[in-house]
Structures are given as structure tokens and as C-alpha cells.
Length: 417
Image (cartoon, rainbow, N blue to C red; front, side, top):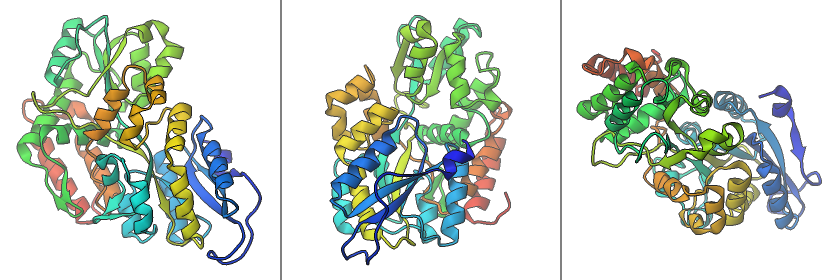
């Protein structure tokens, strides 16, 4: 994203006035948040500024769309105890790192009771550190299995069924699109495969779980797909967007991806769109439900802000039900509250698959971001399993052993990666 967006501060109403936080006068709150193209950030900021009755106005400081660049900017500022940040739009994987560093304030008890009502437990898990709530979820996201209804009668229940059917169709019609590049998207794929196989990467912030048999089962499937003729030809560099394009060009029967691909296909590939179906992600172990990934943004209040009380008031406003629905309408990003999926607007936004998104978020397994060393954990996963076509589906033990070794170094913060 351009530097101009990063630098752009959108002051929505009048500038802040002075005075102590508990005293009279309007305070300007600066909200560092990743850029969103649909305009929801401006709408929410203006609405909450007006509803504050002069307590605060919200000024947007837009971060790049690239998550690594977002984190880099925030880490630099928070590490320097920059008091110009009040509210932070945080990737769901940052909570442990930011809380452990003392950069974000814990959510007060009276606020917590308001902002956690009807929120998916899987989402709340991404907002806690060592059992305490440090962030307030504002929007979520998850992945679905997208498939061609004209090429399969029913969506496959398992990975093995999906690969078998794709190979019957052949590379010209049966390719399977995933995210296999060496980046966070590969961590997303690896984590939900391991969780779906029946184990977890971590048992705690500094303790490895990674049971061998289920982990090797997950790795074996990743290797089988990557070596199959129906794998995308660019699987080692594939991302969410390249997978979308690979599905839209008509050569694919299946795709694992976020819901943004649905309106994209409607605009870019109407013939593909007409045959596009959605299902829950395939099972790794037959009969055991998959554990989809979870993404989204949580709101943190900077520990260095002079306006913490009002920043928490603003966060309460930003996550109101009408604002979550507004984000879904303008940005396509699902609510974090389960009850909002009963609203007719949500079914209109996700026609025919709103219930799938609700079920997937409910069953989701967060990435191992409870570790304060999550960045090292992420790198350990990326370096161990990439490229995925080097995973031997008949003997995934070497990959498992490398993964375990690198993860042990990461959680021990040995700095060897």
C-alpha cells in the first residue's frame, strides 16, 4: 500500500481540546487501523464521534494492507512508548506479543462484560493473553471450500475425497487452489490442517504440543496435494489472490479461500460464478469436523495513551451491532457476534452461505498466537513446511522432526531461526 495512505490522517471532526481525561472537553483519539477499501472506517469513526456527545472525536491513521508492514510500524512506535496512539486495529495474531510487551492495556471489567456478549468463543480466544482480555474483537473472517457445482455432485467431505475427485477431472478442470507461498497464509493452512487432525501446535504460551501421528497425517495430505498433477502450477508461491485468479480462469474445481472471492467472481468471471458453491472446509480425518482458520481485527488500547478511558468508550461504540453489520455490508468482513447472523442483512451479504460462515467461525481454531514469540513461531512453520512439494506423503516424519525442532527453538526464544 502506498506511503501516502500510511501518512494520511483523516481528521473527522474538530480537533481535540485540552484538559484531563476525566475533565471536560473533547479529546481527539487517534485510531491506527489497516486500510479498508469500502469506507466502513470513516463511517464508524464519524458515527461514534457524533454519539460521544463531545467526549471524543476519532482521527484515522491508516496502516498499509500488508500485515507485516502494519506490525512493523506499530512495533516501532509502541516500542518507543509513542503516546500519539490511542486505539489500535490489531491483527488477531498480535495479542500475545503486544500484551506481553506491555504495549496494550487490559480491558476493564465493566467494559469486558459489554463487548463480549454473544461474541464467538473462538474469536475471544484471539483477544486474551494468559486468561485476561486485552483486546476487543470488531470483525472476523474465515475460510470456506469453494467448488464447481457443474463438476461435482456434492462437495467432498474429506481431503482424500477432494484430491481423488480432482485427479479424476484432471489438471484442465480439476485443480485445487490453496495458499502455499512462504508467508502467513501458509501458517494459516498448516495450523488448521494440524488442528483438524486432532492436535495443536502449542499447549501453552511456551509449551509445545504437536503430537506426532496427527501432525504427520496433516503433513502427508499437504504433501500429497502438492505433488499431485491437480495442484496449482504455482503452489509454492500461491496466495489468496493467486488462488482466486486460478479459480476464476476456469481450470479449478476446488479452492480454499476467504469469502471475498465470491463478489470477485461475480464481477470478473460470471460463468464461473454461476457454478460456484460453498461448503465447510474438508475433514483431515474422516468423521472429524474440520477446524477452520480465523482472522480479523481486534481493538487494543495503547498502554501509553493519555486517553485510555475514552479510548475504551470509543471501542465499545465501534463494536456495536449496527457497526458490525455496516462493516459486513461495506467490506464483506463477518461480524464477531454469533447472534448477528440471524439478521436478514447478513444473509443478503453472504447469500446461501451465511450459516456456513457462522459454523466455521464457531468451530475455528486460532493460530498459536498465545505465544509472545509468535513471530518466531510463524517463521518456524514457514521454513519447515515450505515448499510443500518437498513433504513426502509416504514418509512425512523428516518434515515433522524439522518442524518440531524449529518450533522448540522458537518458543524457547533461542533466536536461532
